[in-house]
Length: 116
Image (tube, rainbow, N blue to C red; front, top):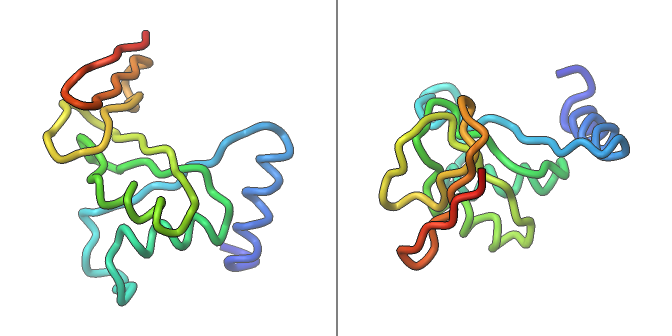
């Protein structure tokens, strides 16, 4: 992207000034293009903090693994997580608004709260 990381940071800041939250895709299926040298959850959390992003979209995923939330907490930059597909899979953090619906389901302690 023109401007590199600083350009992306500026783009995110521009959206924030207009009240728009910014999510970036994570493509866990793409394992051979780039090796960050650390775990993908850690690399994602650190980069989202560096650019000031608000969350990630799990491209083609039916959930976002809990490791991504734990990594975001570790770098003190909470993130929103949006899986693209359904259904909910055990071991994922949340089943949130997916790309095809507006329903949000939050799973905590085996209880479900559904907001339509």
